[in-house]
Image (cartoon, rainbow, N blue to C red; front, side, top):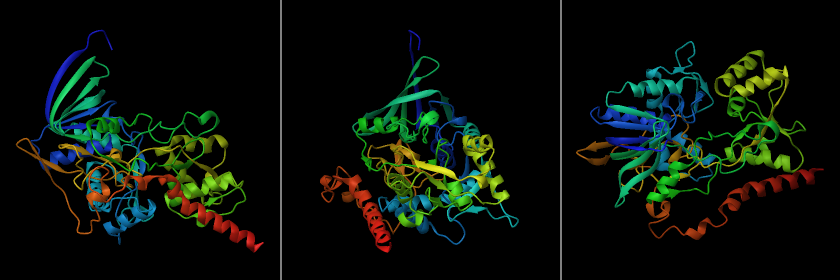
Length: 452
C-alpha cells in the first residue's frame, strides 16, 4: 500500500464475504427470492477463479440418485462421521441437493448423461460432470444480476457488530489503497475453512504442497470468534486420503474404477478397518506403522477405457497426477497409485467444525449467516447446497425448511447455553474417537496370529 489510504463507505442490504462457490450461489438464491434486495460480494481474489473449486471439479459429490431419498444421504454422512453431525442441518441440506444441481445445469454446467438422458452416476451419491468451468459459470451468473455488485481483491478483515447484531464489515482494497466501511442489514460469511495449521505431510519435492487451498486461512472463523459468534466441533479435524506427491483426490480411483486399498504385500486392507473416511485413513496409517507400507490403490489391470477416463478426469481436476502418469511412461493400468494421509484441516465441508448455525444457517450473532466450509455441524456438504433468508424493511427473517425428524437440542448442541452439555466430556476426545479403530485393529491382529 501507498502512504495514503482513502476511506470509502458503502451500503447494501446483504454483504457476502467470500466469492467462492457458496458465496456466489447464495447471491443467486437471494436474487431469486427478492430481486429488489441489493447484494455486495467482497472477494479477496477474483470470483472467476476463487475458492476451493477455482480449478474445477469432475463430480458433484452430493446428489440424491434414483431410488434414494434425502434421509439416505443423512444416514451416510452420519455413519461416515461416526455420528458427530447435526442431523437437522444434514436433512435440510439434502432436501435441496437435486434442485441446486438442476440450477447449475441450467446455468451451463455440463452433467454427463447416458443414452436415455439420465445423469451418469458414480456410486450412490455422485454425478459425473465436466466441471473445469464450474466457477466461471457461477461468476458469470452472479455478474449478470442487476442488484448484485462484486468487489474483487477486497479483503474483509473484521465484522462490525453492536449489541450482538451485525452492522456490516471492514475491508481493505488490496490493489487500490482503500479502506472500506460497509454497512449491511445482513452478512453472509462464506470464507471457507482453515489450511496451514499443520506442516504439509509430504516428502521431498512435494513438501510445499497441501490438499486444501492455502488461501483459505481461517480468517472467517477468527472474525466470528472475535465478534462472539458461537463455534462448534473445532476438535474434529479432517485428514484427506490422497495420492502421494500430487495430493490428488482418491475417490475417482476408488469409486470410478473400483480400485481397492492394498499394502506392500498386495493384501486388500480396507475391509479389515472399514470403509468410512476416517477408517480408510486410519487403516493406511496403521499399515505403514506396522511395516506393511507403502500403501496403494490397486489400478493395475484396469481396462484401456478406464485408463483413458482416469487420465481425462485428473487432467480436469488435478493435472499433476495425469502428468505423473505421463512422465513415468506408464498408464494407471500398469502401476498402482501410492496413497497417504494429509495433514489435518479445519473444514466444515468434510467435518462438523465451524460456525454454529440453525437450520436456516443463521449464527448466534443476529443478522450473520454462514455457508459452505465455514459453517459447522453439517459434513459432506461438498459442492451443492443452499442458504435462505429474507429481508423486509430492515429486518432479517429466517426462511427455509424444517424437519420433523430433527434431533437437534440446543442444550446439547450449544457450548454456551443449557445445562445438558458438560464441557469436561470433550477431554481426551481425539483419543477416544480413535479408540474403537485401534481396539479393532488389535483384535484382528491377535486373531491373525492365533491362526498361524
